[in-house]
Length: 98
Image 1 (cartoon, one colour):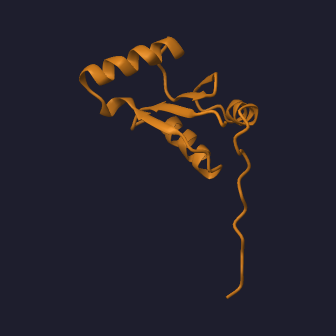
Image 2 (cartoon, helix red, strand yellow):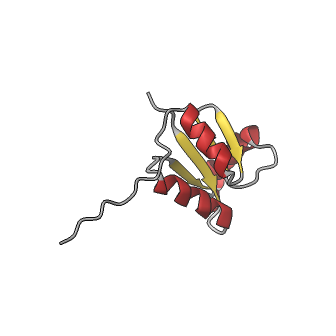
């Protein structure tokens, strides 16, 4: 069974956008959590969870299987994806002449 990928982000964070784009390019399914769009009890619960994963509460915080990666660290993300047996190679588009 493949590991689940979860990414905690802020809408204004360029590193968060790059991390999501990186996962999208590799066709890795992930659960995005946009912390700045939450409020009330939902936000409090997410921040409590995030604090346990990353006490500094910085973004993005990416969870791949049991591995927590803070920031957009391409090599660490690739290694964690490989360790979790998730697809990490970008598929080249297939070109066909009309």
